[in-house]
Image 1 (cartoon, rainbow, N blue to C red):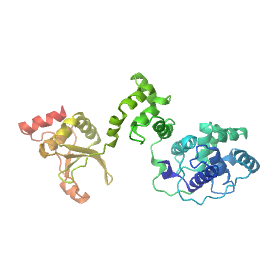
Image 2: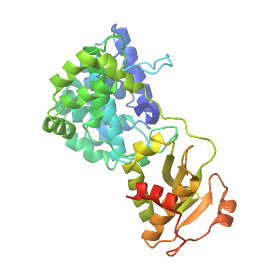
Image 3: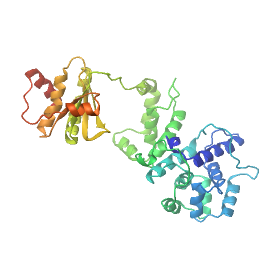
Image 4: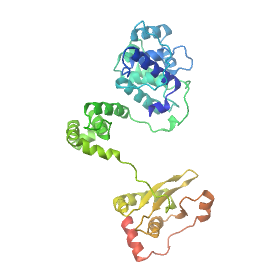
Length: 363
């Protein structure tokens, strides 16, 4: 997901790091040292945010040159790579990239740029790249402060606004790569994929909130390893789950208040399995063109009449003393406006069979 938001300069730096690693006989770079050297190679690029951040932290051009020489043997160059393929990143470099995504999201930046990669290296502080920067007087705290005021000068295609994504915690940034490593260390017989079981192993490794909860539930990393060895081939089949295809026709759509929406949603989910056996399907949400109302969409299945579920929704609305409106599923905005009707407290009571079925959902 990080690659979706990478700036052009960040992609260039990652490809350069891969080229440098390949020259050393390593097609999958795992160290951040080569990435920092690649970012320093953009020192004269006026649009590169990483060098701009380092300059704001007091690093001079001479120090940058010395630092690059320290990270790279003298024979290496920082020529632009010609390969178009995305670099395959592993180990510490993968952690840096995932943390850079988190840092950019926290800063509400429009992209993941070289400046976020530099801050992520300092945040990790596990490899020579961070240590060399600190020797030159560039600390994580200083870089984080400068990042807050640094202008966004790198180029990125605005596919999806990074500013709108939910910000992950630092621990979440570790999970993807740790799960991949766990899949290599604890493969499931006959299946080489990274599974949710390996993500569970990753969760059980870190001193995080999830690890604490697992410990309270009596689940340890070793426990999961043992169960994976014994029953992994059976358990992983559940990872092949996919959402059930929904009916195309036969839906009804109900416009309700947000308060009613929460009541109805909770009561439907309370009997979700029973409804599923009857073939009932339901969805909740909003329309972009009608944001003041919440929506409940119901498909009654083969054994339950539509009227039962219509009454279920309308009775919740009446109980809460709110206006209830129903419109046909799939109708356009003008059509929905023509179909809007109000049912208030005092609506006719349903028949005995209908009332009994509705009571099963309403409790």
